[in-house]
Length: 176
Image (tube, rainbow, N blue to C red; front, side, top):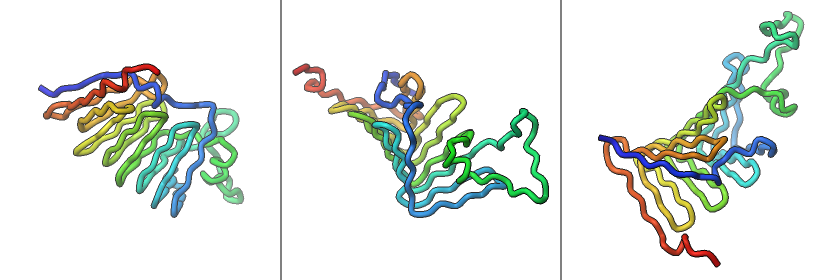
């Protein structure tokens, strides 16, 4: 039976009112597929939260017309590109996939994994790998899948058939 542990990770909450800054070595926009590929030293910063990875693909929803009907583009019109939508803040992101060594940090909390996904509708961030490590100060949690509910900061670490390992630092409980 697989083991799991659940914890409150308030440092990994989503900061909806904070601007997002994205940097990478390369950006490829695939408008027809509604994706944007960020490659090489990808760094995403929002408030006190930083996400780093080797590659990130952002999947965005097709932009509907102002009246709510399906998007309509005349032959003479140029469809809006994700860069113009992103710069104006109108992009409706569906989900994000990050791969090639993922590193997420917020405040005293850090998580590392091989890859991850972020479902915008469900506000779920899932990190997976042979060894997913979550640290909070001197406390270390190890498993193979970390699921974080970004709105609440609720986190679950699964063992995927093995055992979840936890190392608690008694010094982290002391108050100054």
